[in-house]
Image 1: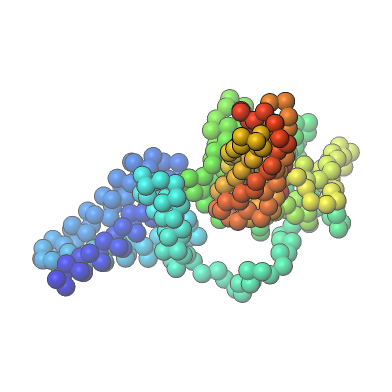
Image 2: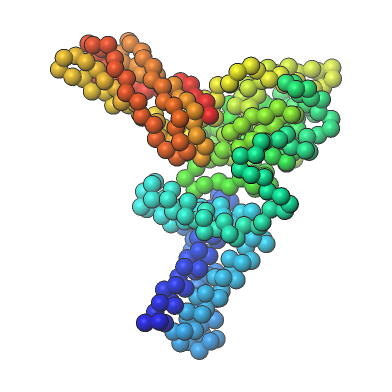
Length: 367
């Protein structure tokens, strides 16, 4: 009985090791099936070898199932610093995906908690979660900035202007592109700034120089242009959008938060902060699914229940949903949508409104 319990417990580190290795492969765009098989072989074959070496007894099997996966898990942070929690989360999510989206999401959260103790501890003092967000110290000295304006030097000309952009404390050269809706980065740059790609990340279609392609999306907490801050920026993963000179495209979801002027004499792109809360529809829309259900009563009353399901890891402050019933158009507001949560509101339409068929759109949103 004790030996059986030891073997059963041995499956925990073995399963965690397989999940972590699978996740590391999946976030690098490898096939989940192939990388899962390789991860299982990398984990199981050494266990079999150790079991044989220790004498092929049940206690030897239990010891091998703990020893080798433990060594794997202990060594991964050294080779993949900061990636283990995200990889574990992705691996758990992949293996739980047959159980549906909710089960996969719960498994991903469990994987994140399991992998967190193995993350490399940050150096120096860790600020409290509610500490005031500060401008990164490594904003390039070439950037001329005042309280609400920043002038970033650019390289190139015309439609090929490269400017420095801050992601936390990491500076990356970005192509200033007024034709791109969503900001993009390649995977290497995302790894550099410590952003993982969940297995169930939403996707959009990007139009690149090589044609249309499907791209997964991630949400970056903070982007800085000079000393000006944009919070909660959706990033599309696009290898074709980077080259030797730039790491991606600075899209409208960042640049539209400012009044932008290109000074061709000084070779600067000047960003001027706008007053008030900016529209964030481009950033929010991939993470929010809106739906509606209309009920038409015998007395001609029309009641529409509007629901917003969020996939975002941050709260959504407000979403304005458009309801089109024939030629009539109405608006519903969803507020305080929690991370990964749902918000619902009910709209009473005028009596007799023809809502036998209707269309729902997300018209406006902000974090």
